[in-house]
Amino acid sequence: MKHDRSKALFARAERVIVAGVNSPVRAFRAVGGEPPFIARGHGARVVDVDGNEYIDYVGSWGPAILGHAHPEVVRAVQAAAGEGLSFGAPTEREVVFAELVNQLVPSMELMRCVSSGTEATMSAIRVARGFTGRELIVKFEGCYHGHADHLLVKAGSGAATFGEPDSAGVTSAVARTTLTLAYNDVAALRELVHARGSEIAAVIVEPVVGNMGCVPPEPGFLEAIVELCKTHGAVSIFDEVMTGFRLGIAGAQGRFGLTPDLTTLGKIAGGGLPLAVYGGRRDIMSRVAPLGPVYQAGTLSGNPVAVAAGLATLSLLEPALYEKLEALGARLELGLASAAAKAGVPSCVQRVGAMITLFFAPGPIRTFDDAARQDKERFARFHRGLVERGVYWPASMYEAAFLGAAHTEADIDRTIDAAAQALAG
Ligand code: HOZ
Image 1: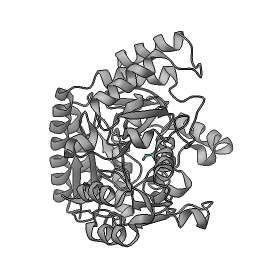
Image 2: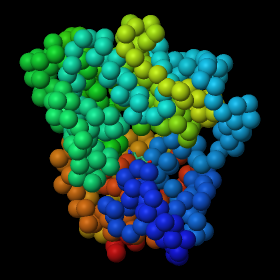
Image 3: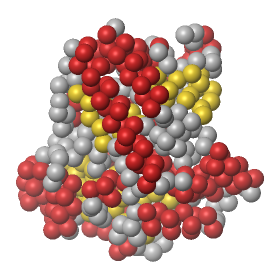
């Protein structure tokens, strides 16, 4: 595979963009080598500027559930763009979009559109604090909720990838208001909430973690969060930026039959454009300005082109899609597990629906500490082996891979072959 044009672009990029990329894991520093620069994507494939084609399991880190450049989404975006890019005023499509989100995720009685997952989680925390009049928030180690200061504490994703789970630049006063616990540790959660429940504004969680690899909740964990928050007057927040519309049409909360107080959505909700949503209980969301004193605003919030992409995407989601993703996911899970076993690599595969991770450590992986025990070098070799064989896989052992509607059984089988070779190498 030739990468001349990517290499030249990366050299130019490094001179003017931090590490040559606009989001850390894209730099490939955790896996060695340099990132291919993507020229275009169609369906389940991306093509780099040197003409190399890859089966894509990054899927823009989640949004691309329908595959890249889905014609109906592209048409909707083009039509909306032709009518004007941004007005900073309400538009009809925002209403239709919010009504659809409410219909698909009924816990979101009242909501606000923002432009990124970070904004959604940051705003959800603020409204939880404004509603309860309390300061503390509880998060779980290895969960990543965007890069707002109070959420960059024991964070997963790129923060964990580069050994900075507690980012520099976050004041100790802010960090002290975030209490952290191990994911899946119901006993510790119970103990903390019993001791300090009257100070806790919110408990925020990725209902299935994607930002330390794919880590499912154990039975009773999410239930305990919702229940304990209810009992102690705190706000439960399901951060479904990654899981929303991915693990089912009603996200993780639909899959597990739970009703959090607040939910954050992004990625698929925006169909590939910058759009995210936070919302939930009417009494809580009624604290947001101008109904209440919690301020949040944005020039590009509910941007008409982004809403058009989100609306077109959500309108195309149907039960058959999730059945297909489940079947493809099971095929990939089985194939990766048996390839790793044949190669004698200590590992385990964890999957929930269309989110999957091959961990380079024996399972089960239940917590961030488990995920951190992986063989980093082996993962890096595996990643390079996949990319060389035309499989575009997340460049961090802390990021889940994603399947989409455009993947085929033949893609999965090719990926398993590539993985078997990469694991043997
Ligand atoms: N933190 C994002 C995934 N969990 C990565 C975003 C990106 O690099 O685009």
